[in-house]
Image (cartoon, rainbow, N blue to C red; front, top):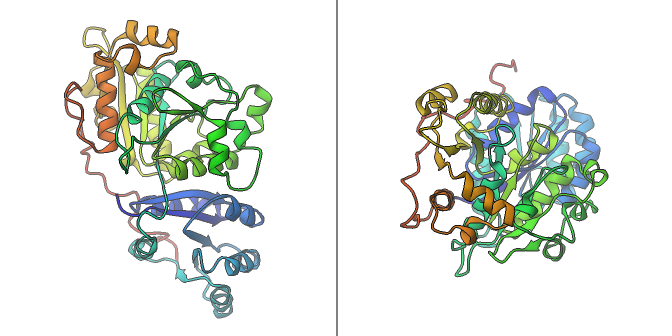
Length: 410
């Protein structure tokens, strides 16, 4: 993986959101850490989210947006690369931007390669090894009961058994984003004194010491961030809170596995913005396949990179009268990347005692499938006892956009 470039977007034009998101997420190594749709919130976002690039979409009100953004850009011109884009050819606007410290100015329409080139240069300027930026892996159930929490918790545990960037094992956190009915802590018998709510109480950047105090350190090495204790706390957690917590965790861990999101809302968009791969868990049943198709469609419609989607078929049993694998793959227009075998007795027993498969059933085929998944996601050689090779996503799909706003007149 090349250098990671974290981007904050300022954009008040809702119609442009999907195009901007698609363009940025088509660039390898780019993570969108915040999307600001009200200029008044930019100062808080810059304080809360670590980033290398500020992308300011000035339309449809360039003067008004620049008035708010200019002093903030000037304050950070030595530490933050600012890129502006607009259809407005006003020379005074350009001069104001450059005086404030905006490094690049793009007039629409422009070829996407231009922005890719600029972001690539930013990545090259970041010193190697100067910071940790982990990988975010959301695990989304296509419908209730497909086993997404089992996959998320055990995948996190398996990743924590693998080597990290240094000599030690990978640092891994698992986060419960079902704020009302999540079960991640219960699946691992983790008794949480603090929850994600404590990390949402402050608008500024979350310090590593606070993260270490809030998470539950499981004996397997994985750190657990539990859902809020009560419904009232859950209702106060916003999309900005979720994004801030995830951004801080990605600076602290090599992998952050998320159980969820459970709804396609603002919090979900914050998760998908920063995600390196989206795991969609389904069974070979009509409701799950239908919902998976809807989710993939929504991801594409909102500008997310569909090449990052990976399908996990859970509870696979050839003798159970399920849909045919080939038919499901044809319907979803992509392969099932991992097949997790049916072993209800082992899985349910592990849940009931609050133990991950690595300790409850280390030699089971179910655990071997999750080892294989973790090894593939970490790009290391899988254990000998793991299942067959991962099925690659070979649909040859091109990036979502070939140009930005190319259809609009200049």
